[in-house]
Length: 154
Image 1 (cartoon, rainbow, N blue to C red):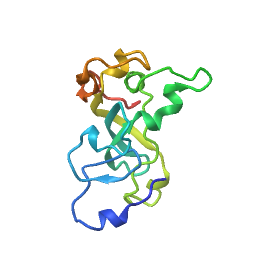
Image 2: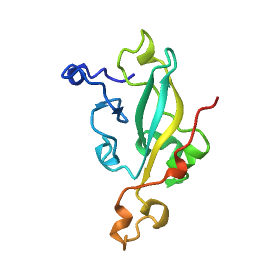
Image 3: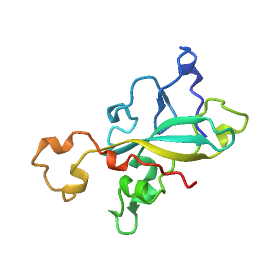
Image 4: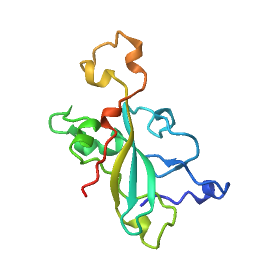
Protein backbone atom coordinates (compact mmCIF):
# COMPACT_ATOMS: atom_id res chain seq x y z
CA UNK A 1 0.00 0.00 0.00
CA UNK A 2 1.35 3.40 -0.96
CA UNK A 3 1.26 6.54 1.17
CA UNK A 4 -1.61 8.86 0.23
CA UNK A 5 0.63 11.93 -0.20
CA UNK A 6 -2.21 14.21 0.87
CA UNK A 7 0.42 16.76 1.92
CA UNK A 8 1.23 17.12 -1.80
CA UNK A 9 -2.18 16.63 -3.38
CA UNK A 10 -3.74 19.05 -0.88
CA UNK A 11 -1.68 21.90 -2.31
CA UNK A 12 -3.58 22.00 -5.60
CA UNK A 13 -6.93 21.20 -7.16
CA UNK A 14 -5.16 19.74 -10.20
CA UNK A 15 -5.05 15.99 -10.67
CA UNK A 16 -1.65 14.34 -11.02
CA UNK A 17 -0.63 13.51 -14.59
CA UNK A 18 1.12 10.32 -13.45
CA UNK A 19 2.55 8.60 -10.36
CA UNK A 20 6.11 7.42 -9.90
CA UNK A 21 7.34 3.98 -8.81
CA UNK A 22 6.44 4.76 -5.19
CA UNK A 23 2.98 6.14 -5.89
CA UNK A 24 4.12 9.76 -5.56
CA UNK A 25 1.85 12.09 -7.56
CA UNK A 26 3.60 13.94 -10.38
CA UNK A 27 2.17 17.05 -12.04
CA UNK A 28 4.69 17.51 -14.85
CA UNK A 29 4.63 15.75 -18.20
CA UNK A 30 6.21 12.32 -18.00
CA UNK A 31 9.91 11.92 -18.73
CA UNK A 32 12.33 9.35 -17.29
CA UNK A 33 14.40 12.17 -15.76
CA UNK A 34 11.55 12.71 -13.28
CA UNK A 35 11.65 9.19 -11.81
CA UNK A 36 12.37 8.62 -8.15
CA UNK A 37 14.97 6.04 -9.25
CA UNK A 38 17.77 8.24 -10.56
CA UNK A 39 19.72 5.13 -11.57
CA UNK A 40 16.98 3.80 -13.84
CA UNK A 41 18.06 2.58 -17.25
CA UNK A 42 14.67 1.35 -18.48
CA UNK A 43 11.23 2.70 -17.69
CA UNK A 44 7.68 2.29 -18.82
CA UNK A 45 4.76 4.66 -18.34
CA UNK A 46 1.89 2.26 -17.88
CA UNK A 47 -1.88 2.54 -17.73
CA UNK A 48 -3.25 0.50 -14.82
CA UNK A 49 -6.68 0.13 -13.24
CA UNK A 50 -7.60 -0.22 -9.58
CA UNK A 51 -8.69 -3.84 -9.19
CA UNK A 52 -11.74 -2.82 -7.14
CA UNK A 53 -13.24 0.27 -8.81
CA UNK A 54 -11.36 0.30 -12.14
CA UNK A 55 -10.09 3.86 -11.71
CA UNK A 56 -7.40 4.39 -14.37
CA UNK A 57 -3.91 5.62 -13.45
CA UNK A 58 -0.73 6.36 -15.35
CA UNK A 59 2.26 5.04 -13.42
CA UNK A 60 5.99 4.70 -13.98
CA UNK A 61 7.67 1.33 -13.64
CA UNK A 62 11.45 1.10 -13.67
CA UNK A 63 13.66 -1.92 -13.20
CA UNK A 64 14.08 -1.16 -9.47
CA UNK A 65 10.57 -2.41 -8.71
CA UNK A 66 11.00 -5.51 -10.88
CA UNK A 67 14.36 -6.75 -9.54
CA UNK A 68 13.01 -10.19 -8.61
CA UNK A 69 12.08 -10.78 -12.26
CA UNK A 70 15.18 -9.23 -13.84
CA UNK A 71 18.06 -10.58 -11.73
CA UNK A 72 19.16 -14.04 -10.67
CA UNK A 73 20.63 -13.59 -7.21
CA UNK A 74 22.31 -17.00 -7.32
CA UNK A 75 24.13 -16.16 -10.55
CA UNK A 76 24.46 -12.46 -9.62
CA UNK A 77 23.49 -11.56 -13.16
CA UNK A 78 20.72 -9.99 -15.16
CA UNK A 79 18.39 -12.53 -16.76
CA UNK A 80 15.84 -10.19 -18.38
CA UNK A 81 15.05 -6.59 -19.28
CA UNK A 82 11.93 -4.53 -18.62
CA UNK A 83 11.19 -4.87 -22.33
CA UNK A 84 11.08 -8.67 -21.85
CA UNK A 85 8.47 -8.25 -19.11
CA UNK A 86 6.42 -6.12 -21.51
CA UNK A 87 6.71 -8.71 -24.28
CA UNK A 88 5.81 -11.53 -21.86
CA UNK A 89 2.99 -9.44 -20.35
CA UNK A 90 4.39 -9.92 -16.84
CA UNK A 91 5.08 -6.24 -16.07
CA UNK A 92 3.24 -5.35 -12.86
CA UNK A 93 2.94 -2.22 -10.69
CA UNK A 94 1.33 -3.66 -7.54
CA UNK A 95 -1.02 -1.59 -5.37
CA UNK A 96 -2.49 1.41 -7.22
CA UNK A 97 -1.63 4.95 -6.11
CA UNK A 98 -3.41 5.81 -2.88
CA UNK A 99 -5.82 8.53 -4.00
CA UNK A 100 -8.83 7.14 -2.12
CA UNK A 101 -10.45 6.06 -5.38
CA UNK A 102 -12.57 3.60 -3.38
CA UNK A 103 -12.71 2.16 0.13
CA UNK A 104 -10.40 -0.77 -0.51
CA UNK A 105 -8.49 0.47 -3.58
CA UNK A 106 -5.23 1.42 -1.88
CA UNK A 107 -4.85 -2.09 -0.46
CA UNK A 108 -6.00 -3.89 -3.60
CA UNK A 109 -3.85 -4.90 -6.52
CA UNK A 110 -3.74 -3.09 -9.85
CA UNK A 111 -4.54 -4.46 -13.27
CA UNK A 112 -2.00 -3.66 -16.02
CA UNK A 113 -3.66 -2.33 -19.17
CA UNK A 114 -1.03 -1.00 -21.59
CA UNK A 115 2.41 0.51 -21.93
CA UNK A 116 1.94 4.13 -22.95
CA UNK A 117 5.63 5.00 -23.23
CA UNK A 118 8.79 2.90 -23.06
CA UNK A 119 12.20 4.52 -22.60
CA UNK A 120 15.66 2.98 -22.44
CA UNK A 121 19.28 4.04 -22.16
CA UNK A 122 20.70 2.01 -25.08
CA UNK A 123 23.96 1.03 -23.39
CA UNK A 124 22.26 -1.50 -21.10
CA UNK A 125 21.53 -3.83 -24.00
CA UNK A 126 24.64 -3.18 -26.08
CA UNK A 127 27.58 -2.84 -23.69
CA UNK A 128 29.16 -5.66 -21.72
CA UNK A 129 28.68 -4.97 -17.99
CA UNK A 130 31.70 -3.14 -16.64
CA UNK A 131 33.00 -2.21 -20.11
CA UNK A 132 33.59 1.46 -20.89
CA UNK A 133 30.88 3.30 -22.78
CA UNK A 134 32.65 4.81 -25.76
CA UNK A 135 29.70 6.71 -27.21
CA UNK A 136 28.18 9.19 -24.70
CA UNK A 137 24.87 9.20 -26.61
CA UNK A 138 24.36 5.62 -25.39
CA UNK A 139 23.62 7.19 -21.98
CA UNK A 140 20.75 9.34 -23.31
CA UNK A 141 17.15 8.28 -22.90
CA UNK A 142 15.57 7.02 -26.10
CA UNK A 143 11.94 6.14 -26.63
CA UNK A 144 11.11 2.84 -28.30
CA UNK A 145 7.51 2.65 -29.46
CA UNK A 146 7.85 -1.06 -30.30
CA UNK A 147 7.14 -1.79 -26.64
CA UNK A 148 4.17 0.57 -26.32
CA UNK A 149 1.59 -2.17 -26.44
CA UNK A 150 -1.41 -3.60 -24.57
CA UNK A 151 -0.25 -5.79 -21.67
CA UNK A 152 -3.57 -6.64 -20.04
CA UNK A 153 -4.44 -10.29 -19.77
CA UNK A 154 -8.01 -9.76 -21.05
